[in-house]
Length: 324
Ligand code: UDP
Figure 1 (cartoon, helix red, strand yellow):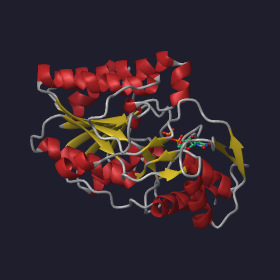
Figure 2 (cartoon, protein in one colour; figure 1 turned 60 degrees about the vertical axis):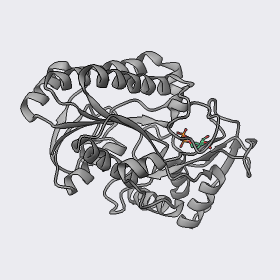
Figure 3 (cartoon, helix red, strand yellow; figure 1 turned 180 degrees about the horizontal axis):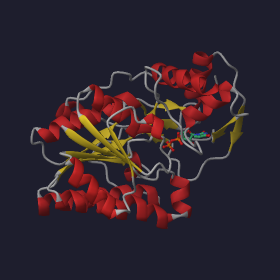
Figure 4 (cartoon, helix red, strand yellow; figure 1 turned 45 degrees about the vertical axis):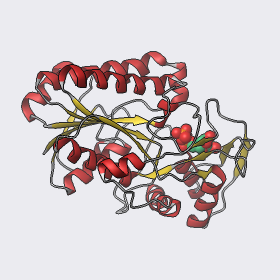
């Protein structure tokens, strides 16, 4: 198929482009390079452009006639979204509407949307299934929840079929070592610990050791980037075969604490890491773990790298490449 990947130069998007190319799809990447990297797009057509630019969008659809769209382009920092809700709603909501408009205009009605566990806010129970109430607690989570609701309405009104994939903690790197995480600034736990291990960072701060968990640190469900991408591929096949619109939680169903991640990085890297205990970060729930049974049964998706050690070792390989 001809797939438009919006945000294909970013962390998840670039791994997706690689997987789509390997699966022999024709790929068109649209990215404004605000946080992505041109050299992370390993093939297909690349267009530097912004979702705010409706003329550019029109041109892309007219020229390349995509049959389905995957949308990875959004702002992702929870803390920043609280301070700058205007730019989060503009980019994550208004710009997504521009994309949906042009899709309707060109009658492209298969859409895969990057959503997030943040739509659930502070969970009532874990593992979190799709039936759990959506109650986001910050503008980032709300911006994603708004699009999920808009997509449900578009389905009813326009027969526009979409899959929303709610990522828990995306982590790891391309096992071939060609791609990895390159956020600036980096805020995610695993790359920050790896940078502390490789010497790029002086220390890592643990945000709270007084949570109601066995070792007192927060528990998250880390999912390998390649497994996230294979879920998108499964969603694409599902939609292509006429599947109805749906939302899926994506994780391994197992949580690891911040301390367990620290131990894993220490073991994989063989380096000692300077750790400073800090206060809790605002808005961090104690536990976020996915129940991904719906994706297993309806998409036929299963993760290939559910263990923390492979997630950390692939990411460590990438980190070593950054410092060499
Ligand atoms: N965390 C931490 N120190 C850091 C960054 C993150 O202790 O420098 C913790 C954070 O409080 C959370 C977990 O690591 O419990 C994962 O955070 P991350 O930002 O990677 O992902 P999030 O769960 O916020 O999406």
